[in-house]
Length: 207
Image 1 (cartoon, rainbow, N blue to C red):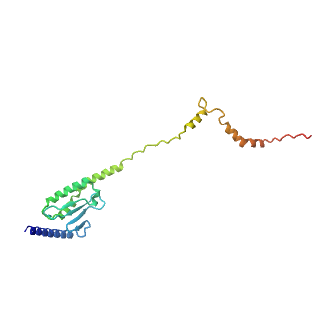
Image 2: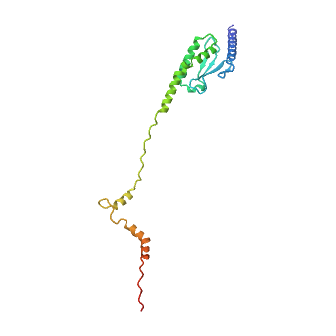
Image 3: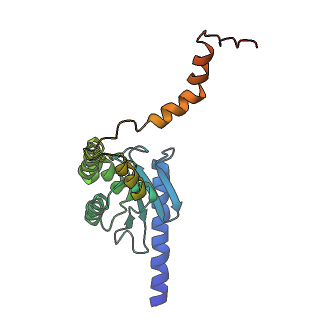
C-alpha cells in the first residue's frame, strides 16, 4: 500500500509539474527571457544584457513541489557581474518570498515579483559597485620616481693619470698641449708657410 501511495503521489506531482510548465510556456510564449531547460527546470532573465541591473534566476521543481518551495539558483555565468554580497542578499529576498507561497504553484508569481522588485533585490549593491569602480578609475596615477642619469665612472688608473697631470694648485701645467700643437704644425702649417713665403734662395757664385 505504501509503494502504491508513493507512486500515486509521484504521478500526481508529475502531472502538476506538466500542467504548470504548459501554463508558463503559454504565458511567456515569444519572451526571449524565458527558457525551459527540461520538464522541471526553467530560467528567467530579468533586465537587459550587459546592464548592471539584471539577473538570471533558475527555478527547479523538486518532487515535493509545490508543497515545498522550488530550488532557486543564481549561480549562472550570466550573473558574474554581481558581487557575492549582491547574490546572497537577492537569494535571501527571493527565498523569503517563495516561502510565503509554499503549497501553491508559484513559479509565475515568483518571476513577476522579482521583475517588480529587482531594484530592491540588487539595486543598492550594483550601484555601490559602479560608484566604487568609478572612484577607482578617477584616482590619479602615482608619480614614477625620477631616475638620475648615471655619470660615467672612471677607473682608478684613469683617475691616477688625470691626477698626475695637475700641478699643486689643481691646474694643468702650461704647455701641456704643446706636443699636439707641434705635431699638427709639422703635418700642415710648417711646409705650407715655407712654400708661400716668396723668398728665393740666393744664387751660388760660379767659380
